[in-house]
Length: 519
Image (cartoon, rainbow, N blue to C red; front, side, top):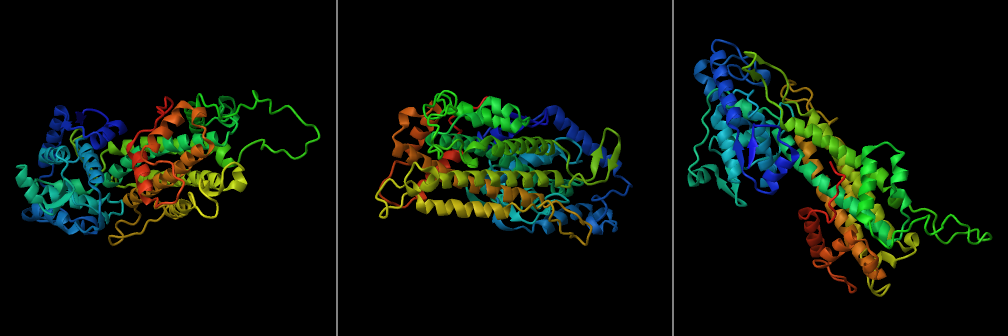
């Protein structure tokens, strides 16, 4: 059970709710604060001009709303802004969005009735996900369109996803004896006006990116292993003189993955520095490997640091009040501003997708090295275990990896600097945070596909060499596990189902190495 409102919600808490189906409960003291905050607003708002309570919204704020139209104003806001288009967000992302919105409202500075948070927690615990569309939000005033669709379901309208099917909201509410939300004062704007879509999706992205990085380190280690690379490029001594946390963590992860390997070479033990033949001018053995093999800690180190910082920033946003105005019952006042602005999340998502794109580029270069016999001088072209000229080996899937990385590179253009003024120029600079989070999600998914192809190729390389007994225990464990779903092949056959099976393994399975160095 995860208690919401009691303390800071962590990435681990968030992951447990989404992926381990842990139930949530509302902290009693925090719930009391929500009620106190609502009662303060109810009293304070009498005979005062407060944005979004008795005024219009956005550029229409100059118009005062009559007392008899106050509740109608909130319902009109919800219905008019339920204008999303494109694909429906998957139920997992909607659940993430709802957890983010609930946690923000539980900070007790939004002036909502306790009915809102209780209804949200009920939907989360029953895996009832409002139908929310990808397109619509510009990231300031928050994710208005996506959160309008959440609000629409809360008031019993629109549709919801339940057990992978779409139903009218009221049909599911009747099944579970759920009472739709009734607006009390400002619940409409309080639910709409926030960053919870980009934040929820961003948290999921970070969870997936951390696992993706671990797999990238493992596959980089295996690539070095099958080509019998030297070990000094990931040694403690080489990396510690460069003072970046990520680089040193990645190097440690490489050492941990390859512990016990009989294939990785030690430059000192093998006396590589000793000149064996003084007259030999052209060396048959490379003194050091290509960059994609020996610069792994320098390439993936910044990715590690980017993910770590993104986790801090997006977790801070998750635990923040991000609507407007802020209803402050402690200082007995209401503060108008722009906490709904999503620049913090948008920038971190852009940085994350750029770093993950670089991760996929590293994977593609390592894959190309294994495929090209003129580079590796060790394996047959395209890791072809059949008859050269007749069979094709991994040639076909390399096209898929290359095209997917190219898509990542194009998707990496930052949304953060792509503000387009709208809303009659009231929203004259916006974050596009939800777009950034969704594009980052696509880049992460693409990168899993690229690593899948790299892993399949590495397994073929191991079988070509017949070196299973020389592998490190960790890499042998991965080889054994994946060979159960992707057997060695010699004769050509369609590979799309193998790709799907191995990708699913990577996305749903934790890495075989339990890294002690991750934060």
